[in-house]
Image (cartoon, rainbow, N blue to C red; front, side, top):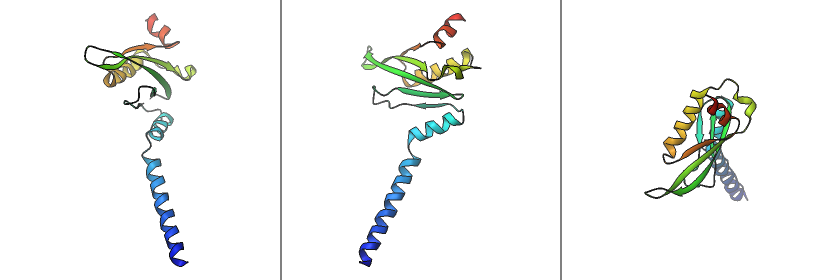
Amino acid sequence: MVLLFRLLIIIAFILIIYSAIKYITNPKRKFELAHEKKQFHFHDEKQNVRKNVLVTYKGVLFEGEKYLGTTDKAFEVISVQVRVKNPELLQGLDREDFNVIEKEILIHYPSAQIEWKSPVKEFLSNQ
């Protein structure tokens, strides 16, 4: 009976350590932490085209929808449509801020055309 109890304690301890490691290394948690601190963070599962790109910049959350297509060399992401989750948080952002986000997306997807959704599209076209 004592041996069984010790075995259960060891299994519980291993399970707690495993859960803590999974929590600490979770990329979504790192993204949410950067969003709360109003830092830049780029979150993407590059191997999964169906998962959207998430970017947080100065406390504003952007979501980019990826579209797969053909280039001269291979099938790649050829289009990323970026929209803002909460447009009311855009106050204070300027054209250079959107250029930073575009450059970061182009680093990961050099063949992509970036299309901004409203209201950023109107803001960028007016300048």
